[in-house]
Image 1 (tube, one colour):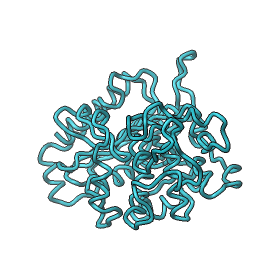
Image 2 (image 1 turned 180 degrees about the vertical axis):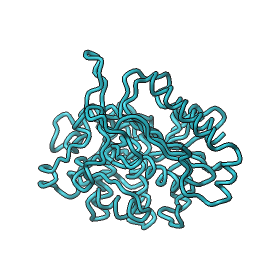
Image 3 (image 1 turned 90 degrees about the vertical axis):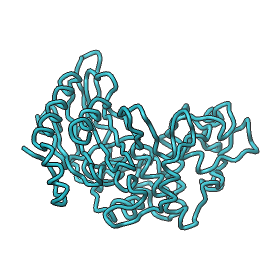
Length: 375
């Protein structure tokens, strides 16, 4: 069965003339073969071609115990792809001149954020978003207490030996600090800001607050247990943290929502969001960030890693294509969102867990979809 979405007639004819049914059948056969190799619980995919969301499909199970099939409207906690929602939100505030990328994080979060070895060098918002702050996750990142000198006697261990902007280290605490800055500057609770200024304008269903979402749509996430040789459900992936939220302190408790990894969204809606960045800040006739902001997010600030502001560039995902996007992994989930801004195609792949990863993780799944549905 052809699973093409509603698209303009000329796009449909172009795709159909190339043998859409055969291409889709080949792509789905390839996905199923890879799933068997990796013993995947479930996987949801979305493909954008010619700047249109052309194909979505879900394979396998939403819940192993109940044998419930995975469907396209299932929500996943997408892990670190969430970071781009945080950065996009902050770029909106940069455009409104509420903050500058060069502002001192200490002044933005309300407590001193300084590497003790380089006390006179400020750490900027841009350094947080590009992972060049010199901050690390050694003290944890689920609360700002980890790096707050008034809360943690070991706060100095949160900093690496090199100076701010002197090196790259991927760090989740960077983005929980960034989410805090968003909340303090906007006056809106973090999850509500993202909903009101990104999700709602694009008509997307999702969010960072578990209690505000339909829990029946959550795809159960599974972690592989080597001792039992089985996939085991990870309920903490969707822990509502209602008690903590009831005691919420604006401008400090933001890590409860995990700006660094807590977005819950479906694969098709993530693809629709991806198109915002693929089109330099505008999609569905709506501009959410400027072309300048979009370019800043997609410009690598660390040559080796190719990382910009919550988006990275890679030429190793699809041979011959320079792709931009992000990956995610947490609680057994693995996710990829990558697009080619000049050629106007992109791919989203999300799995809720697998036992025996095939070489390259999700890369073979992306390459399979590219081969049959885009190339």
